[in-house]
Length: 140
Image (cartoon, rainbow, N blue to C red; front, side, top):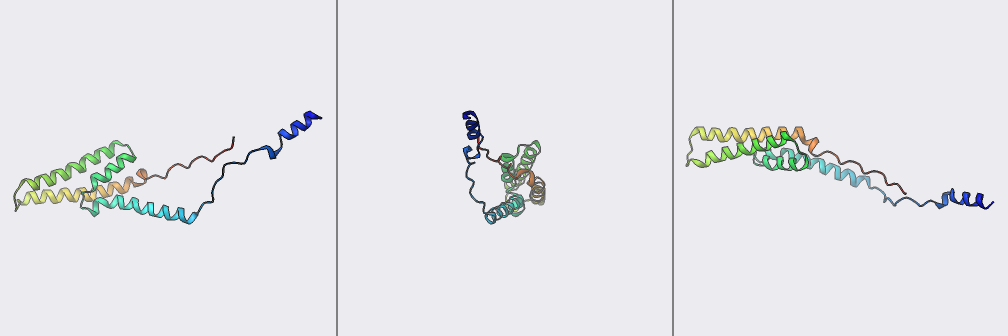
């Protein structure tokens, strides 16, 4: 009889510990945070277009910090070189600069601003991927 009582006490549900406390979730706050984060990723992608290409190296540097990829490194180097070349050639000549210098500067800025924006829009979902959901806590 003592064995049966011990077994009953051991298998009783009242002996189990409750799981960890999980505070209630405010869904409106989560949706607002999600929307603001999504708008922020689009601002990040359109930064080169809004700054005439000068934010392209910064945006690709952020992408490198979040997603290591050889194509991202190549794009970072390419757009940085285009901006340095365009500004360097323009700065090497006195005012008024020759027409070919102005053309080179304009083409490099256009390629950087439009190309970088298009490429950042393509890789935006990979760079700013949703974080993995943490596993559900289990009481031991």
